[in-house]
Every structure is written in C-alpha cells, then in structure tokens.
Image (cartoon, rainbow, N blue to C red; front, side):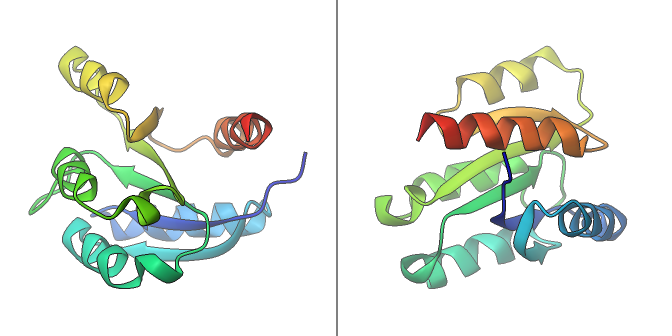
Length: 134
C-alpha cells in the first residue's frame, strides 16, 4: 500500500532532521516535511496553525534539551481536540531505560516508540497499519 502523508520532525540533531527528511521524501512516504530543532517551536507552530493542519504524523525525539519529548507531550495534551484529532505521534529514541519505554507505552498520545536510527520500512509498515485501522 502506498502511503504519502504530512510529517513534522522534532529533533535536536540537525543531522537526524536532514537524514530523516531525505529518507521520507526519497521513499515517497512524505508529501510534506516540516522540521523543528526545538520542541517548543514545534508546539508553538501547532498551537498557531492547528486549525488548518492536514492529517500529520509527528516523529518526536525523546531526549532533547530545553523541552524533551515527554514535556512536549504534556504541552500537546493541552491543545484543542480538533488539532489532536489530526495528528499521530511516534516517539524516536535509542533508550533502553524501561521506565521511558513504559511511559511511552502508557501514553495515549504516542502510538509507538521507534528505535533510532529510524528504520523507514518499520515506519512504513506502522503507517500502513494505521491507515487500515481508519
């Protein structure tokens, strides 16, 4: 099944942002990619542009300075439901900390934890499964 969706990438690594954007576009998974080096900036953009937001997938890094992935989710929780209904979030991390993994699994806003580096085939399969559920 062919998937093409809008993405927001949130990661404090400019290298990861660059690579993930190129992978998503080259593989044809992304129709648009918006990148944020700061979770605070991404949250601000969502808050301001949410009403016109198309269906979007967020790839959210867990470990970031200033505002980490869990802090972003806490702020995201406060956004209007009309925004949250258009967004699917996958958290990205290389963590092996069982507390982080459990926090991700128990959070209703995070669909899954994907390992870094991002495996584009795994992401594609998860997006296909998500579309089939709709």
